[in-house]
Length: 401
Ligand SMILES: Cc1cc2nc3c(=O)[nH]c(=O)nc-3n(C[C@H](O)[C@H](O)[C@H](O)COP(=O)(O)OP(=O)(O)OC[C@H]3O[C@@H](n4cnc5c(N)ncnc54)[C@H](O)[C@@H]3O)c2cc1C
Image (cartoon, rainbow, N blue to C red; front, side, top):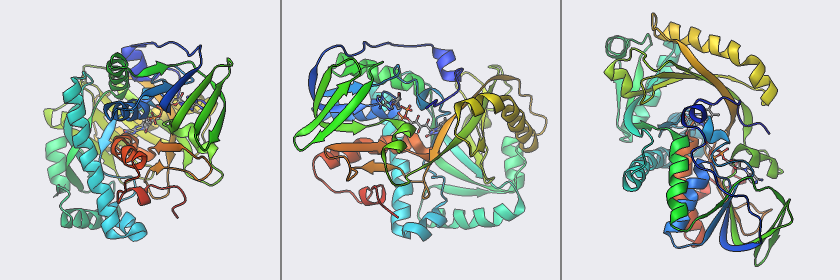
């Protein structure tokens, strides 16, 4: 599957930061992590810290999947609004998922700081704005429940939003907790640090077969080498959906573009992530090198050639949206790109075991919160391995309705 268009901004900006060998011999490991994107970087870090011997395998180069394309808006706000999630899974559970998102952003801030990773991580606020009057009525309902459960929100009127951020809206929720970063750089740097601590990383390493046995897993590589592990953890992103007989996530295409680096951006805007109530939603943020990024314009087709074909048209559409919400903004398009995107019906990830695959665990963050879900996966996976429970695990399990 082609996960993204070739010219992803983060890859062009940073280049191939580090490269790793392919695996050319047999080996054994406590845990084999499949996937060298941001999820694999976070999960292998957690496992290594917990004392496991860990080997990471990727069939591409490190961080060349969705991680090279992500716009890295780090939000606690799940794609499914809290009031709707509450109807689906109960208020207590829904609030728990939202609170877990807040903790994940805080945990990531600590990790970036402890590891001294230079990835432009910046703590911000997030504005979720109503794109019209009708949406404002529903958004007020969302605001009321978030406020009731102390999620750190305030309601901003259209006039306040226009004055502070020069945005034309019908009002919106301002949230205290959010962040952004360069996820591609973060992933590379975290892998690099952990390799020095003993993490084994092999890229361009293709698996031809996996046997799931009572005593562990055995992976056969296309070059004939064999890897044995006690457990396997799939951090393999959207392609993993094909492993399950049941429907887990819907895969579609999403688009993004970014301005030249000297955009005239107010200091208020630089402190903000922005998204709205349109379906599909449009989102914006600034980068640490002074660019404005805008994304959305999702399409139900998940095909690499389709994404290449319509990318320019989608960039035009995103610019039109920008001009509607921020009339008169000078946005000189510098790069556009697109990628596959996966979302679940309840907006929640799949973190846990699947009955079809003994000794295997999955950390699959879907939706606009993919990265915050992957951060949650760090603690949750350790609990799963220790047979401990966590109230989030039943909510993120396979087979939920
Ligand atoms: C345009 C765009 C914007 C986005 N914006 C946001 C955002 O603002 N905020 C957010 O949180 N998320 C966002 N996302 C989602 C985010 O990118 C993903 O949640 C995240 O990158 C997933 O990381 P990952 O490591 O799980 O997957 P990937 O980065 O895709 O890594 C999975 C890795 O597994 C490897 N792999 C797969 N199968 C195998 C196999 N069989 N053998 C060996 N290796 C294998 C792949 O080669 C790949 O390198 C966005 C995505 C896109 C495309």
